[in-house]
Image 1 (cartoon, rainbow, N blue to C red):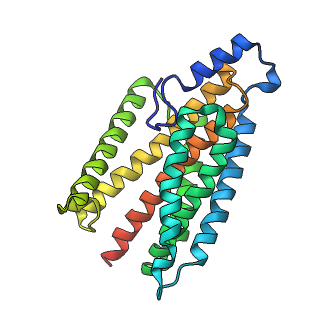
Image 2 (cartoon, rainbow, N blue to C red; image 1 turned 60 degrees about the vertical axis):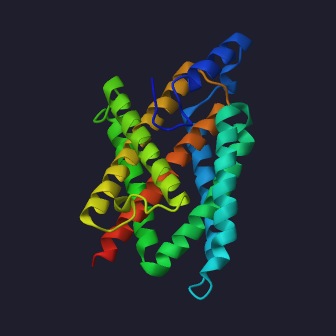
Length: 253
């Protein structure tokens, strides 16, 4: 089993579930679907709260006011995410902390997009929630199945996008122009953003599959926080990519 989400790799639940079985954990100490859903909801509420805080500091006259939130949220969220991936037992603490930090970053970015394209943030939020609900329904009804070929395709595409973003960042860091289609509102740029949105959305299916696998395997209770963390990572990525796509489309009007 594989996932395009770096937080949910092939052995994520198998390893911890094995440890749980060896230690003889009780059923009440194991991961549940309802528990994961509740913790995901809590993390999203926390993310929205800190995003609102960062947004409140933004003004067109002083756009730099949100830069501290962008730096603290972006860098801090990335570090905490790495810690969570390598120290899954810390997830009850690090997962909410990630949501709070990532909210600062998302709030600052959203405020800047909203200043340039009024109404775009609400559109992006509604589309993100709509995609989440639609894919969850498609997954539960069996319309979309996380087969091995499906997983391999999504993982390969996700890895390719990550490498492309990394190369583009490196080029810009050393003074090169970078890959214009990633940021430009040309039809090629719009097509690329559309492709990334689709891949980010399909990663949700893999997340659903891995969370369900964790529940079935009897993973320990703290993995509810880890599953919520992985799903939040994907939702944040999906939201930001939808925001970029909408911005490209509106800039052509």
